[in-house]
Length: 328
Image (cartoon, rainbow, N blue to C red; front, side, top):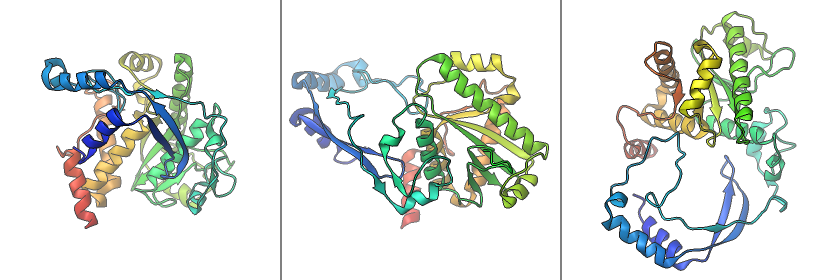
């Protein structure tokens, strides 16, 4: 579907012995670059190409049910090119200087000055802060900071009320971000349970008129709010499979459980709605999430998980064409 991609893929599979790997952060800054060797079995590639045209199970491959954008690779889905990895964890990283980082200084303990260095986020416990930077940078493409979008708002005691707040008239979207690196089920559950309780406390404070925010304008906005939608944003590696969703339903009441989605899925969701109708973005985000949650509460959905969605039947190509026409 991408013009010229087939040539690039064939060059990679048949004519290359190394790749340049570039790591970008969510502000599209190239924060690290390295060269890695690759190993390609040319004969195996030729056999795989043959199978995709001649073997039914390869030709008619159908993707199974997947969570978000995660899908394990397989020979049926594609041809694997081994990459010989190198440990760069101790390699000195660049300091990226940019005035853009000044916008993110209101996230606790993120930056010392207007710079970014990836090595600051490689230790355990720092990945969540990096994810918050990613969320903040993405949301600022859609909403206005300090107007309908608030990052790490504080109460009068200087304690964080929530990770993010998004407003649409009398409704607010309360967002908690959780990044779980460990594959241990206990670590995953502890992080998600904490997010559920944090969101529940925020909802109760808003609905009971018990907020006391440091920002007087935000306090006034919350005082006029009577609709609360709770969302837990997770890193894409985290898979809320059916078994774990059942675990959550057995540990919490339905009203306690927020909408779950991944950072990439949520970003895709916002992008699609903005391309469809930019003037009604906030309303459409809120109304779609409220509808999803109502279906869960009414028993029409088994779990409030946003991982597949459509925008009035429009394909990705249709939405892209809408975006192009507006740019013109």
